[in-house]
Length: 449
Image (cartoon, rainbow, N blue to C red; front, top):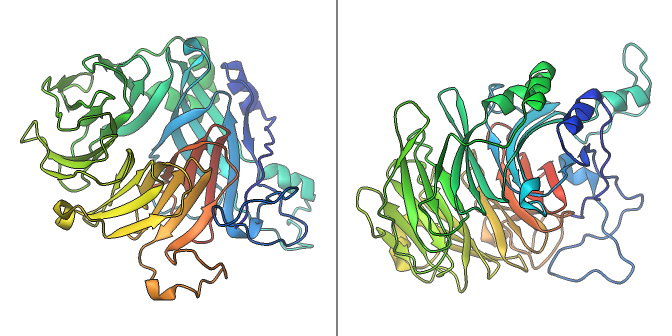
């Protein structure tokens, strides 16, 4: 499994020009990487270093879909907005909506973005000699398959640490943790309208001004990164900061304000790095911290945690993900380890699975939303890994790819980005992943999932 190339090819259609008028720099949707002319050896990160003069080339056949895009300043956090086009969509071309926040060089240069990517085609080659019914040339066909992107950008003072979105009725809401040490809630409706309509985009650009939140909370004593919307109670939110405090937000009627319990959940002794609501219990959430622990809380019994694994990792626990259909938590830490926890045995402090493949801190983890045995992770080693727990350990030594010394549960290693910060599976496009990094976004589906 070799790395995608990093060349990007900006579109030159009217939509892109219109987005540039809205204030973006170097925006562009990249096309697929080019396959190597000669078949080379498989490179496995962490097993052997690249030799002088060696370069990685993308193996196009390992992907069902692969695209790149850039948004000017890097977006080190993003989330996926569900659209109204239906679930389980596997037909090309595909489309998606994202919300992202930038971390620009200056506080004044940051943006809260809504991104619409569409006309996303797969990597399958057309049969040689095949022509369209109206005799279109190959160049015209390639032009028709160019990926498209619209950006609706709202100025935001301060770098955005993390963004999470939810739908509450007809409202599309973004919760934003920023370096201002505030958590803000934004209504994204005007931005969502703008990326779907050129007239709405023109109106949006004309009236563009600094983003005004529906609601903001300054009760945290310092900035943070941990934030999550409840999947069970629309509008319920939890936020955690770098001084160990966690606050729960309850929505008030009307959808424009929240009641926040001033008594923090404060069992952690150091920075709270990530938070996740239970997908099945509306009052339960989990947290992880620099203090090396993972805790499970019930908001009906503040301020102490209900369950805890106090030495979950040997260093900072950076990220967690709660399985949607099984009682499992996934965690990733500065130690590069991925651990799977069975909540029925959580108090034992022993994970049910433990994987060491990443050679640097784990930066993001997420269970597949439709396959409860599949998950993905990203690391500061510039790798996205995909895993399947249903693969039996007895398969070791008999991997289909012929690479030895790798866990049989490891499905795929995706490379080609620099400083990967966050990954998400698309909940409506089976197997499709989006990853964001200092070098931009990748949108891909591998042959493994």
